[in-house]
Figure (cartoon, each protein chain N blue to C red):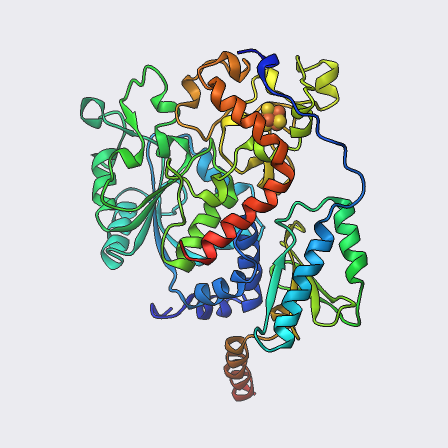
Length: 352
Length: 136
Ligand code: SF4
């Protein structure tokens, strides 16, 4: 295959028409709250790009993030992202092993210096010279710094890569940190979650491919399109919260009637993520819909913030002002959803 | 702080459609006007991302009705298209190969993009057909 081929040419040979690009982009625009009229523009831009080289680095992690992006959605429209990228290195997935695998990474770096995308899952241990996790005789820190030097941008996938995650939980025996604690001279975006939602990963990659840059981020480096609202903002149990209908046990009458899980420790009011809208397993459900409160897995240090089963008011998570604001915002939630979606759309349409 | 300190507001129960379908109809009218006046060729309104209740959805369907054309498309999963009773307003639903609804939108135009053959695909077909002819 000629290197100069566009993605459109390459995929057409595999029988993938431009209608498929249009569908993919319509789905992406919907999940990122982009104006629907952007979808055809995105499809043209995507078809005109070259296949993006991606180097995936796995450090102190459990492979749950890879499982999430790979397993949950095949054969979905989102899984087309694997046709749009060239995954040149991923030590769990690639056929090559040992030296051949490392050589493949070096070659991809050389050929695409300054242009490749680096995806990281897992935290990086810094204690004792970083000896607690090494690959091919190199510490994770050395590998990250070497590979990041030629990257166009980095995507930290999962709470471990974004904020240190479980390896960083007290007493943090390996001195684990997230990627943006180390890499300061390249654009880094955080897609936290334990694991992150597949569409959040595919949407962010697709956005980079079509617009040539990472999407707008919040103060914790997360894409606003997916992390702009709390779980509580979009939770279908919210009207029950407003009416003070709280389940007090996992098998009481309230739980059976589907009442709010706040008193059982739900961290939805202070957790920013898209589980309540995009959901999991082909849009099937999400923890609260399955009867368990939100654990707050996309927030920094979620593991160390006291019991998952204590109400926020009794843990280190909440403060009175934050919780009162969450409650007060409830009155406007119906109208707010539409307004918010419009706000995202306007910002993106203006290219801000 | 205890649970009792949280200010609780009773949300009024909502029955029937909200104002959303009528608001959408206004938006459709404005966009249709723009296409009619030649200020735009194509406009889209995303329905999937809007907080439409089942009652809102049903009312929107009733307001727009069904027109003369409908089509099924197979492109990495099924897509359904139909023209509403309002000429030039098309309703599209995209499903993935897993049969999950991934996008739903109104397209205000003479012919939706999903029904048109893209020029690049058309040109690729020229080469493909030529190959077939020369192989015979
Ligand atoms: S506290 Fe949890 S269960 Fe209750 S409305 Fe908020 S997010 Fe939903």
